[in-house]
Structures are given as structure tokens and as C-alpha cells.
Image 1: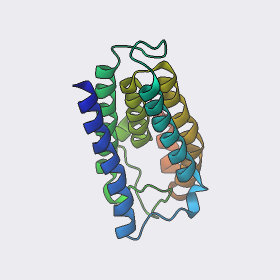
Image 2: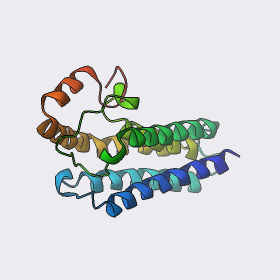
Image 3: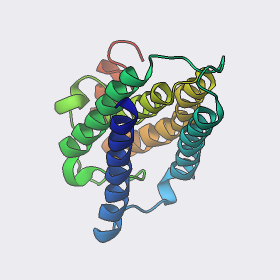
Image 4: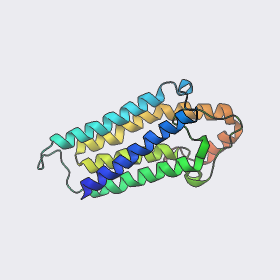
Amino acid sequence: MENILLGAVGLTWAIVELTLRVRDRVRGKGGTEGDRGTRRFSGALLMAAVVGAWVLSAVAGRHSPLRVPGLEAAGVVVLFAGVVTRVWAVATLGRSFRTTVEVDVGQAVVTSGPYRWVRHPSYTGLLLAALGLGLGFGTWPGLVLCAVLPVVGLWRRIEVEEAEMTRVLGDAYEAYKGRTKRLVPGLW
């Protein structure tokens, strides 16, 4: 049952991501000049983590020492929480959300919804979703891949994005940075 739920929520996540890309194109937004290759890099590492964890799960036997039984249900819950967090962040930003690093001149700093706790809740959602898949696929190496590679991919992207936000939004964004964490409320 957990495998079906994991697949259904994973497919929902993929549809959300595809929809965001299509939405950018339809609106004539989503230029990648400002992101310095970070969308491609972070996306590649995310895909490598998910595909790697899936392959490990597929080749590891039921009684393999790589397998950690009982993580599947937790994986579904964490994956679902990640997708919900991502969608909530996108909905809160509305037309200002893009899959690329772009900030509209005159755009206000959003501090409502999940942005009241962290500066990058859509990335928090991505990281939770990847971690959920790592748990759901049920191997230790797969879990490590899904916990580490997406963070590596987003680290530089967040730096690039925050520099652009500071450049365009100025003191208002600096003040916001001073009172919120990047990805994890109260920690980081």
C-alpha cells in the first residue's frame, strides 16, 4: 500500500513541477540568465538523488543489508508534507513565483504564509519531498543520496537568489533576512 501511495504522491509532485515550468513559459517568464546555471545544477542533483535511490531500491533484495524496513510509511508522510509545503509557498507568492531567479522591480517582500517562518519554503518543500522519496525507497544509501545531493544543489542557488533579492528589494529584504532563517525555522 505504501508503494502505491509513494508513487501517487511522487507523480503529483512531478506534475506540480512540470506545471510550474509550463506556467513560466506561458507567461513569458522564467529567463535563466540570472540564475547562473543553478536551476540546471540543482535539478540535475535532485534527479540524480531520486533516480539513484530508486535504482538502489530496485536492485536491493528484500533482505539486503542496504534495506531498512519500515521507512516506507514515513516516506509517504514526509513526501506529502514536502509537496504541500512547496505548493503553499508557490500559492503564497502567486504571480511572483518563478522556477528561475528573477525578481520584479517594485515587488514586495512576502512575509505571509510559510514565508513568515523561512525565506525559502519552496526549497524546504523540495528538500522534504526528496527526503520522503529517500525514506520511501527504503535503503540507507538511497536515503543519504536524497538527503545530501538536493541540499548541495540548492546551496549555491540560494546564495544567487538572495543576492538578487537584496539587489532588487534592498533594505526590506535585508531586514527580512535578519529575522528569518533560510530553510528550517529557528535553525538554518
